[in-house]
Amino acid sequence: MSIHMRQFDWRKAILHGIDLAAENFREHEDAAPYTAMWELLREAAGISRSFDAPPRTGYPEKAMWPETPDEITPWQRQMAYLQGTLDEVDHGEPPPPMPSAADVTRAEAVLDLWHRHALWRGGHPHPHKRAIYRWADGGTLGLAIRMTGLRRHEVLALRQRAAEQMLRAIL
Image (cartoon, rainbow, N blue to C red; front, top):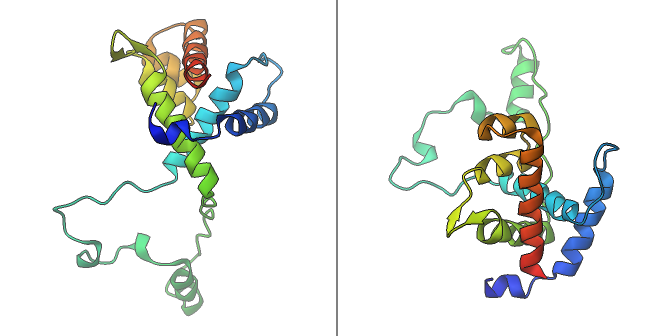
C-alpha cells in the first residue's frame, strides 16, 4: 500500500460507506460488511467520472478550433433566444456539483485499493474485473452479466469477493 494510503483515515471512510449502504439499501439485498466497501467503490467511480481526462499533447489547442454549438454558454443561448435567432431554449441539466476535497481523497484511496487488491489472480487481473467496475460505475447487473457471460449469482459472488478483498487489504 502506498504511503499516501497508509495515512488515510479508513475508519472514517468505512463509516461513510456504511451510511451510503444504508441510503441505498434495497429489501432484496442483505446487509453485509462488504456492502459498505461496494458503496464506496460506486461513489469513487462516480467521482472519477466527474473529472475531465488530462489534456492530450501534440494536438491543436482548443482556441485554434472554430466555435461549435457546445461552446456556447447558457447565457449566449438565452440571448440568442431573446433575439429570435433560436426557436427554443434547451435548458438541459445543470452540471453535477463538484466533489469536495475529502470526497476526492476518499475516491483516490478506494480506487487505489481497487486497482491494487481487488480481483487479482496469479499476478494478473481477473478477466471479469472490468465488468464489475463497469457495474460499479453506473452500469447494471444485466450489463455485467452480458460482459462476463456468467450467471447472476456468479457475478454477485465476484462483486462480494472484490469488496471483501479490498476490506482485507485495509484491515
